[in-house]
Length: 99
Ligand SMILES: [Zn+2]
Image (cartoon, rainbow, N blue to C red):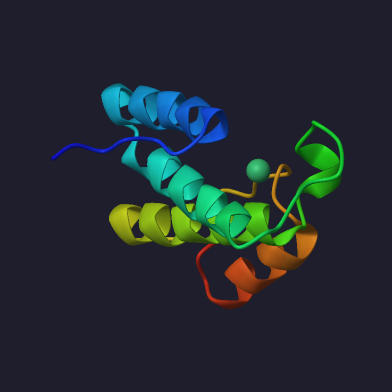
């Protein structure tokens, strides 16, 4: 029994998952898995670009998962990242996961 994507959209996402898996960047891969899971619950972005959507649930949940994994692995707070939602950055700083 194998995995069979249900739609062209799923096949499109599966291509990205394979690229991340093959890249060995598990943190980014985890981010994407969480991000795409939020879409499965119905959340959609406005437009095609990440910047105006960086505070929507899919980006915040995915970036939170990645930040938890990276800060745990590094044993200390992460450098600031301007691509993250400012509210997420504030929470990560409060939790001592980001400088
Ligand atoms: Zn998305």
